Length: 393
Image (cartoon, rainbow, N blue to C red; front, side, top):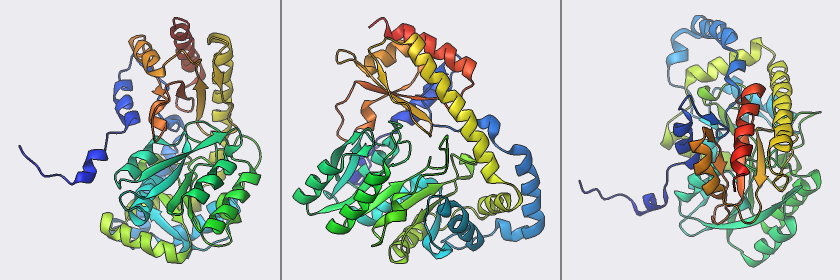
């Protein structure tokens, strides 16, 4: 069959992580490859009650079309309760409900990128963002990630030498894949640079509330005086990913463009799912639920770090995140994570090789491990086997 696809589809590839997850469906595989929250902590009993409440309270309205912006009371609650956690003072008018934060990535690319436009991404960065952006055929400019986040000196050099940068994409909190957290100083510096060079910052924060100690860190958006920061949030990591409830927080002038995208893409997020989320927030203490997740993930992270020390060769480096879902391993120069992956899979272990997280490719010395979706005993068993594989190389 001959089909005349758009030329931009040539740059569209299947998500490597999604393909790896298919392999990991084998019950004999211990998989560290996903970025899933722990399913045993989904509030299923509460949601049974909330589902009945929504149907009784809203009846057919819960099954009808709704506003493209999203359910107004939910937008107001997000502005008041979730955005205030990251020090952003805004109203529901600054919030648009999306089908997860992934849709926010796609919409941002659709709004800002023409073919050949330059965008700045961290090195490494979230693979799902690279996949979303590639569909619009940009030119990627990578900026190195340091122990405290994006290298802002290098970033300013990029901005000086490239007057046509469309936006800077960053994950400041417990970054996927590296687990690194951007310092407050650098968050402020990014805002200064965005205003100085009049360039948008796309702040992606799916993990911000999963900090293990203390309060959430102030977002980059909280330092934004000129309106150049677009913030992406989601309930996927702190509530239920299957409901696909995320949001965009931005100045109204920018949000209007996102609204047009939403209308053209899928009209709206499920009314029913929005009402489920809203009524859960009204009837239960999500902050207590998040605190439970923090404690579990902290324990699982510490277990994985301890297993890394106990079972892995001593020349393998790793990050120690203060929140989130991942650790990031750096291999010695002579090792290749792709080659290790093949042998690991033969031995019943899956992880994500590091090279897909580099927009321009070329790095085979890293790998990402997830610790959120597995109990500690199973994780230790898997880490011990992975350590045995690593010692063969």
